[in-house]
Each structure stands twice: as C-alpha cells, then as structure tokens.
Image (cartoon, rainbow, N blue to C red; front, side, top):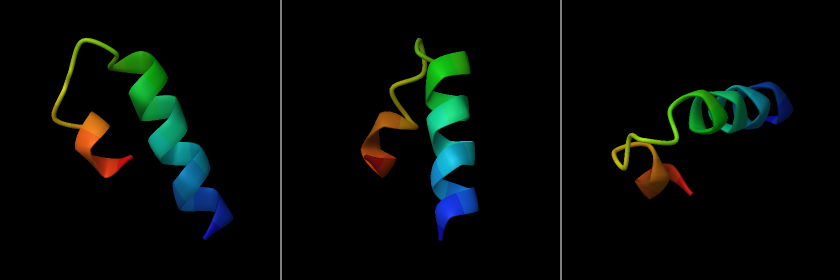
Length: 25
C-alpha cells in the first residue's frame, strides 16, 4: 500500500490545481 500512496502524493503535487484528487486524501 506504500506504492499507491506515493503515486497519489506525486499526482497531488503535479495536479495541485485539480480538486478532484484532493478527495482521495
């Protein structure tokens, strides 16, 4: 479950303008 978490973190950092991914947090 560590890999997906890292990917989500990277996506959040790269897609900070996207609020659709923030809901994952």
